[in-house]
Image 1 (tube, rainbow, N blue to C red):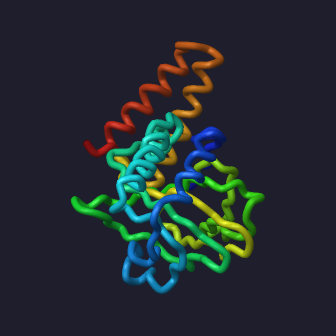
Image 2 (spheres, rainbow, N blue to C red; image 1 turned 180 degrees about the horizontal axis):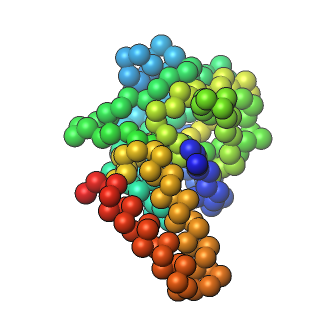
Length: 224
């Protein structure tokens, strides 16, 4: 079953370039200020100061693009999205292995899924991979500017040290209407199958059967 999802072109090149330019003129602070107590020692980066109006405007604009993406909505079934962070990793910066807090913010957001929107082109920096660990091993993720990865928050993960250039990213969290990751994956797989079937055959009897099963499972598993 799908445990992570990569989406290309969540932002177009012009929007990415504008975000990078805006990043350069906004105030930053030590990224450890937003880490949980256990992860604080593992984190070395900078984050744009959310108290600044320009930071909030950029953060909210990027988050709106993420939230509106139809494939993300199918995969994550979002009930709420947390306030994202705008991160900068320079040479020597990294974020060691850690697990995100299960609850964030006030009122508390249950962090079922995390996402990273890459803003720097991958050939502009070395290192800086998001490395997600699982029983199958490590999955390094380094995507083009404007692409997004969504993954389960329960996964141990890290950001590899940057050895050249600068890694800019927007990171955030999602509380899903379907709490269980296995159930979300089943619903996503079933939804993709019925959409492909409909594209080939329209409202066939098989499509309607799959839609009925999908609907009934969603009723069983979704939280209002």
